[in-house]
Every structure is written in C-alpha cells, then in structure tokens.
Length: 138
Image 1 (cartoon, rainbow, N blue to C red):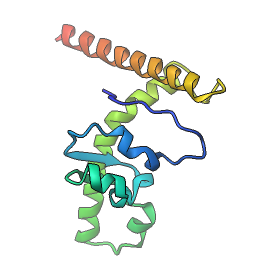
Image 2: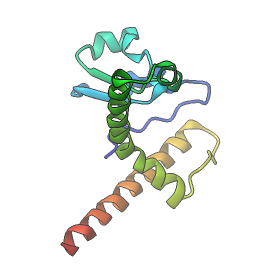
Image 3: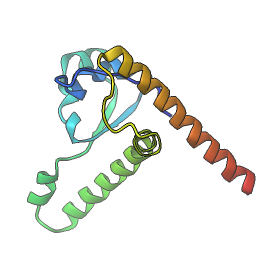
C-alpha cells in the first residue's frame, strides 16, 4: 500500500523530496537508480540516519563487472531489490493502464495532487478486491 503521495513540478527531481516521503519509522528503503546518493543528502542524514538504503545499481556498473561469482552475487542481489520494488510499482501500473493516467491533464500541482490521491486510493481498492476474491476462492 502507498502511504505517501507527493506531486512536484517537472523540474524537481524525485530524490529532492525523499525526506518528505518518509514517515520516520522505516528501517529499509528501496529505490531505483534515480535515488543513487540520496542517503548522503544532509536532510536525510539528519532525520533518517538509521535507515538502510537498498538502491539499485546503475546498469553500466553491472556491465563493467567481469563475469564470475562476484558478478553473479551482485546480479542476484539486484534481482531481490527489483522484486521488492515491483510490488510497489503495481499501483502505478493500475493507475496508468487501468485508469488511463499516463500524462498530466490539469494545470496546477493541487489538481494533479488530488487526482493522484484518488488514483492511488482506487488502485488500492482494486488490489484489495482482487485479494479478497482470491481468498474467497480458496
């Protein structure tokens, strides 16, 4: 389930508002390659210093590694990170494909932020109803 939704201007990078997305009780945070170096940001160090960051490696780092057991271990670790992130991406998939939210339609962050809240709320309802149907079938 998504616990925080934040809409920002297009010229603001996702990693710039990471501290606003965390509620303080996290022990582990997973992120894609866009969040590389976020653990070194001053606001993150001050407020969320005990968080373990599992950020995906850039593809170029993996391609430069020599084949062997070390690379195989890193690829396996990256696969595990990606499998955790994929569970979160499901809400984005539902919002984009099922509800057709593929691009911003409204002018103004407040309108887009409201729409995102409704989309993720609806996506969570869809996932919950699917889970309930699976449990009824068993």
